[in-house]
Length: 343
Ligand code: ASP
Image (tube, rainbow, N blue to C red):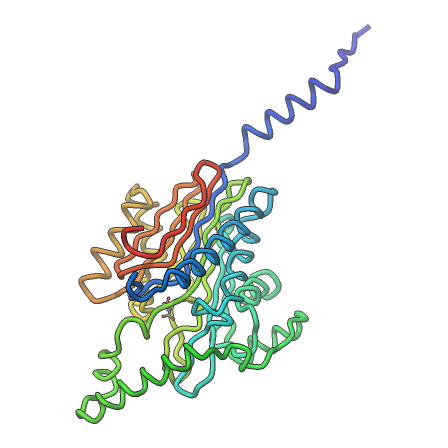
């Protein structure tokens, strides 16, 4: 007769816990609140403190999701919602104005586990565009929806539409007026639209929020949300909702969220170029990110930056502007917040 061997429950549970612990991935999150002409001289100590506090709040909220075992997608949307709900950043409540004195927002999200992605472009009445991008990914058969169609879809998902005025802020309105005055002056000097637009400083062309994260299951995600470019017209769409340009995630390489002059980020396919260098050339995310931001974009005049993460929890935050609002936290490093180049 066979003897059955009884293993005490406590030993079984300990072994199971050790196994679970051993297979758990490190966790990490990086966020950005846009790159641009961000210099210390433009900040009062109070303003700088307020930006740092908001970045800290967002990165720590995203990290808390990961720490509780939540998915990288949840961490990314949680962090981005906090930035979208703040008037400090060019997304949601702080979105810049279009030429017609409205706000048109773009957002996208991607999941590295299966390369699922969702994006919305030119939405005007969505309080948190990143959440709608996620619904497009999870609840539609499409990847990118735009304008009224995207808002029609939002209604089918129970997402209420809000008044475009919700996104009004005095500082962005002043910025629009300054941009228009500069364009008018350039036109009076007989410069065509493109030349006049080229004369606008980088601060009118950048600003966005984004997050990348790695969860306990070893899956990476990225998300990006923006009001786009000040004084934009003709339904202009930037790189932020374009998968591969402003957002990319694949567990085989890396997850990237970009901020910068969108036209360049689209043309140079920035987010997926960085991950391709990691996957096919064996570069680290830091090498690949710096190559693209400094050696590819800089020589052609493409300004901005990216945040990158890989499945080991490495993070890199290269930018070629004067500053970039940014923050990171992982299970092996405390909260870091940076604004200026030398932070
Ligand atoms: N990339 C955004 C756009 O071009 C702006 C930014 O990130 O600063 O719409």
